[in-house]
Length: 585
Image (cartoon, rainbow, N blue to C red):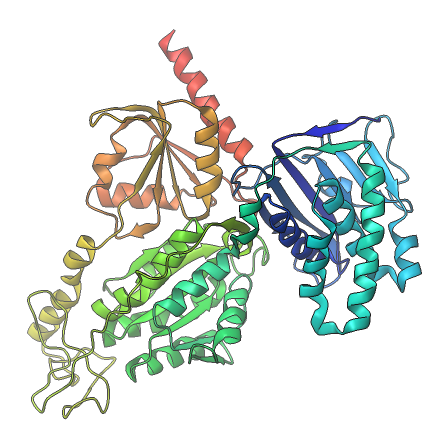
């Protein structure tokens, strides 16, 4: 099959091949080049847990308007392996143009597929080896998109400068070869997307980086963790920035050691955090209870992936809400934040440290592989209004670490800050901090810890309601309300916007526990409510019912390791709108 591709608004490019073929390199070059070229850009990846082999893919979207969501649609597929088409068969249509090296995909039916053969490997070998094929491909795509060659070259220099002049020179030559290929491909692939030169100066940021900046701005001074996908990128980010921001990063021997190190540093006065994923966090559960009993703050970054056990180590999920909510024995307050966009990731990550210190509790930042790995451009991140609040007190000789107060918040000091003793005990204790088995003191201490929730509720983030109505009447009811938390934010929001209907709304939660007191009333603003979650039980739906007594009408659940696409959300919305029509008939 042969056919032209004409795109004027939004192009979806997917790169697919085996691990080790340089897909991540192409992605890194492309997203920078596309932004520098004046386009809004979004990228996400799905990859197998292999160093070599398997099939990995990266999606890159470029548009004249802001784009921040994964879509199923593939306009251009750059296939780097024989298995790429099989791997993505459900997303390839008759409109998809497949670009590949002339040595692969020879068994594909040319009547069924739009196939373009390019001698990538042959050109790469002339430059010094097959490793340059990915840069040739990146150059060809950048040329098709109309990215200025100088902007592309600047990206190459920035990325490879540390490897030496010879490598940079060869990569620049590879980019030039790619642009020559791209000029030939323009006869078939016509992309005429409006550019905006101001985009060049915007920030290109990942979910991991947004969280990391929030942690740094929140006053993080100590991080101890054991590497585990998809939390490892945050560990690398903090370790890389540690010297610049006077932080200590410690790679512990295991997760148990990591969280106990964090609690030790917190006891000594350093704002501390750990980063892990589900099965790693399972080892930390006892120490979460230690935080609750010692009333010593800790921030826990829990980047979700499918379980149980190791599950799918490199895929995405929202399966650990219950784990974060119920981990450890006993009862004590905690907060769970679930950011779904870069601005919220910065805000809640910053806030996590203030709230942990203020209420002397564990605070969770719950994300997932999809959110951790996405990139898109934003105008700016407002860090000027983010303040680090200080809640430590200078002790006196009569200091009581666990003094019973009306709001449950005891004065907290650290060793050496004043003349009193900072006594803590993992057993139940009296106001001074000494172990006790007095049952009346036990009752008073449990009540003291739990009453903090009253104040925490006053500072909780309210669910945010999005809709297409220009003017929303106070008593307006929607036909359908989609409920989402965390990384489902942008796919749901884009799908709701695309409906153009003023009777479809989206209620988004960047904090899922404790739920804001207005949550129940907000949920009653729709005839039908539908929750979207990347798990098999509908964990958030159950939490809503437990906390508000409101039963969500429908659950749309996806748990195959992939995020919701915009098309899937649109399909869910339209299905329920059509069902409503049938009922009305």
